[in-house]
Image 1 (cartoon, rainbow, N blue to C red):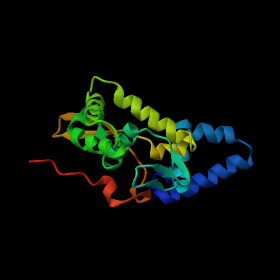
Image 2: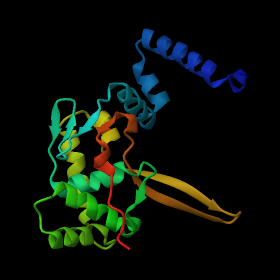
Image 3: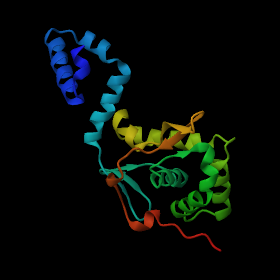
Image 4: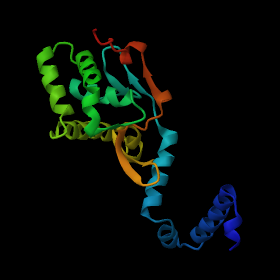
Length: 201
């Protein structure tokens, strides 16, 4: 078929021509069937990228998108800061490796809270048998959905990303990472926000 020899750019031009033809004939139903719901969802998310606003984190750890404050408790802010600091993503089952870092973020966002209570909270969050981390991520998702449409919110929330890994020629496994996909150039925060104390020797 001649389409096999088209470059991606030429394919896009041809797709645009065919889409316009279907729309001119009033057959958006066929266009929807051809693209499929997953593709349209992906397009909605891609289109939302151009409407993203900066996420501003103040020195007293208040979160703002535009002029709107994201209503989060200190524990949610601590979890969010951890994932912001790791754009590569983190598997929930590996959260124990980030215990010290998460504790420090929690201490920053909950300055008036007793350290023992903070450590107990972190223990729940990093326990792979506890549902606490899922509950906190759900609350974060709800807070961003309250401020914007779901496609824009998909960039700000902690979402799932499965990454295929291959070791040698036989072993294949998947990392079920949790990530915040917001471009980091849109995160406005002072240097101290992500500066952590070094571990005591």
